[in-house]
Image 1: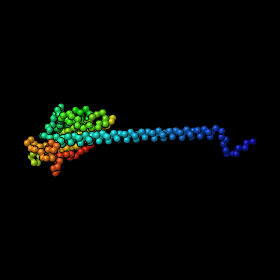
Image 2 (image 1 turned 120 degrees about the horizontal axis):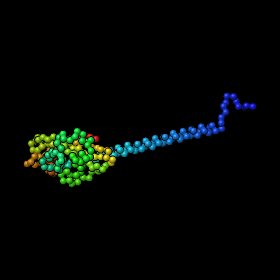
Image 3 (image 1 turned 135 degrees about the horizontal axis):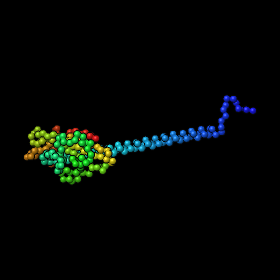
Image 4 (image 1 turned 45 degrees about the horizontal axis):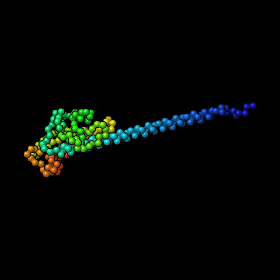
Length: 222
């Protein structure tokens, strides 16, 4: 006699066990995918943080090289340097408009051929300051003569220069290039500089109002 109530279906003994196993497998797959996604996200965040830190390091080194190059030029005495046509001996002072439109895109070999290594006196080749180069490439700087005109008092020359500095990160793919516009005065032969300029041996007088010495503007090129 069939005692099963009408409307109910018979189930096999192992049916529920198989469903539980399938659900467990799906749950394990989901947890595995979530774990892999979290690991990949953590790795990506770590790489982004490392690249950002590398970029900041390269930018800081480029700014340090720029300040050093500016101070070196401001400390020079005598008459104004003359522009030269490469290959140049001593200071490589480029004429206005002679540099590429985008020097920040040039490679390290171009910078080495047309500029100077940061922290090294271009006239004597003497290392004056050890700049922290993060990558295998040295830190470089360039100098371009932008404009010159006689000083108002007729005793010297006012000169504007564009100073550029380049530094790389650890992988040498991270490149930072900064530039500034520098103004300084040069005394004419036969005219003595004032006391403030005589202290550093140059014709630059930072105490004048407005000063005819120092950075006028700066920008990040890369």
